Length: 144
Image (tube, rainbow, N blue to C red; front, side):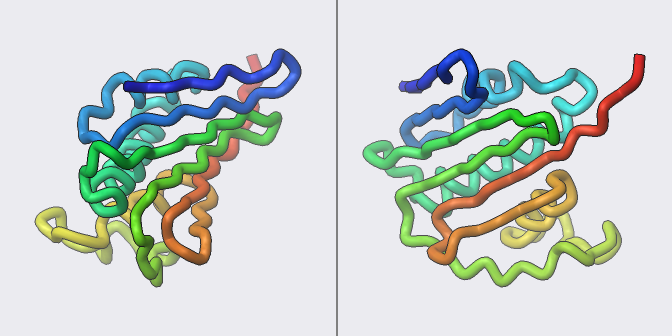
């Protein structure tokens, strides 16, 4: 089940919550509704990675636990805050300075997803407990 809180007219913040699942297509479709088409594939990949991490690693796919996503739009860009009900983790990721050839290999079980988040989003912030991540994507205005 997906629950969505629509924003008041003047604010552009939406909150969505859903039970832990790996069936994320409808959630991703909703989260990408207001994203320009040229950004959707890249942002979809990043959001999918963050949501899978929250469901699988955070909530251990426990259907009694929820994932909450707050999505907001500003003139500068987009941000998503994704929270899970897990125990958290130590996010000592040094992905910001990695080049593609230094990413963990595709067959690696852990670590590659965090590096993908840093590659896709302009800013990645973890809370001190490791149960909430804020992902920001800046938008460059395209002149018509």
